[in-house]
Length: 354
Ligand code: MRU
Image 1 (cartoon, rainbow, N blue to C red):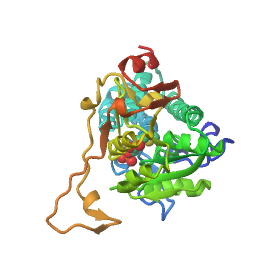
Image 2 (cartoon, rainbow, N blue to C red):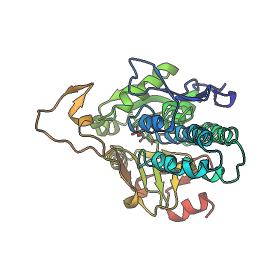
Image 3 (tube, helix red, strand yellow):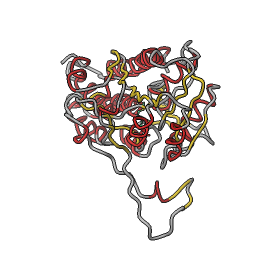
């Protein structure tokens, strides 16, 4: 870990899920949390692809950063294999990496940025590519700090907030997107209560968000996803704050399954709905949410809990990992470039400079 990626002096910024150390990627194994804090060392691009697919590392920005470092590993291996044609040999590696998970656009964004960067390189590509991957990592942390400030400013003092999935340090280069806003707002004493959906079926809320909050000393209250309507009806939360895996050109937002339900429920109860994501999550090439590919994951994630079968043999499961929240249900999209209130195609185009 370089100094730029180290835990910072900003309050509640102590956790790093992805590190580069001794020419390897060091990942917190998120399948093992919260019982075990173990690390997995990644030495090759295929190992990184497996780690992304199997959710050792997950969360759109963290996947992108891991992919950027994986390109460094692969380019080093291909250069050692054939110094004259390493770029050509790297292409299938990049394609495999970009396909590891389909919904989070940060993965493709990072692979494309690294591919573009290879174009001008001469000699051993590793030092320059490592510097570029490290910049992607540093920029992500800086974006999260900025979004934390911008998002916290939208929250009135005394508010309760509900978050879904895990969007914190574990899901990013550090600090988090939606959970970065929670961190910043809690530090500014604006938030009185943080509620986290457990986030069935993979339990990112129960296992990861709760772990981060406990580690940082921020009080957190977990609830079953199905309890959120009652939570809102009782007036316990004023904002729902979530991250994004891909924001389409019109502001439609793909995020963890259940986000759409939370957005509909929030609108019904007059609770505000905030999406927090860096511009690397905005995909202007995808017109609207209907065109965002939704990952389907294995049935076993739904049919089992904690490794034990909870449904009878013979039952099947439908397991879309993400859903799309239409832009009209979103009150604010917070990015490092600024806040878009009531997003639509025109406002998103202005944000993205198009
Ligand atoms: O399947 P996951 O755990 O990778 O899904 C993660 C999410 O949906 C997050 O909300 C999203 O990636 C934003 S993380 C800053």
